[in-house]
Image (cartoon, rainbow, N blue to C red):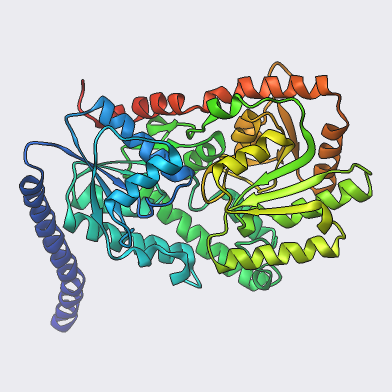
Length: 476
């Protein structure tokens, strides 16, 4: 009897002691971080943006810099910091690119905290279990950030929700996030469950029922972890109705969740003349698998061969690396196989002025990504997408899903602002319909579309962002 009691005591101690040690270590670290905060900040409260890739010039970075500009204007008494892993460039180079590429000039220079562990959040570091690896890697990156600078408020503008609990519970910071795309969604679970092959569900998994079940277990477990980290957020901002629906389903924080549409440069593009358009179809998107450029080529082939509508297809997009270059070569081969190569032009990494000329002369905008969260493409020099094409005077033909379906290519007064499609046959038919329209019919659609996309302006973003973030900032 005595031996059994001793065994029980030993078991309890074996379980309790590690927990007590962990609590003691974390409590001590938390106290040290509080002391560090008071030593670092002086009299000013510190607001930090967690954006490890801030030197890019895409839609996510436009959100970052316009948000910072808005806060500097509204709360000039606060100090602002950017956590970044862009160690190969200087602060001056980062700010010069912000002004040159995004046309954003800050009220004053922020401080930069350069992090050395960014490799831990790169997808290439995790050939398998990529979502889990990147999420755990963001914890290490957040720990490095805290040890270098302890802020009062942290805003994640690049989708690293797993980093926020460290800031919240160890750094005792108020935390907010701007979510462009949920790390995992019910749509992803459904695709795996239905054994559909996609860029994130390889055929060797989709064709194997046992592998599919294992991946479903992994995805469901990951979704539970994602739900847990979401609950630490004080303010949640989402970029579209589609993203909001998925985040509400996962995080269930309706009173803390706000839709803040991303900023788009609609004013400049809306000034382009809509007349004298060529029979040209323009696609703006990085050459990534999820953008589904092969669907565009197959639909364009049907447009030419089956529907007898002559036109030119221009694929304008950014090539980030060799993988993107390989995809472009595969697309050139596919165009040759479809016997449409002479009607397809590739415009890689072109500057904004050249892209603007393409937008000014094209009749149709084409966007084929399934469940695009909002609809921002990227040409490596400028972010542009569904909204920008509509503002520029093109008639949009977009995938019937995600943000384009729910927020952008929506009817106004029961009249179309563009067209939605899913299959290559539907895309071909929609493009043929636009090409066959009279100039007056197209002009009416363009006018409605331009009026509608005004809601996605820089000014509206700034106003909505400041309203959403207000609860965690000092009252004015």
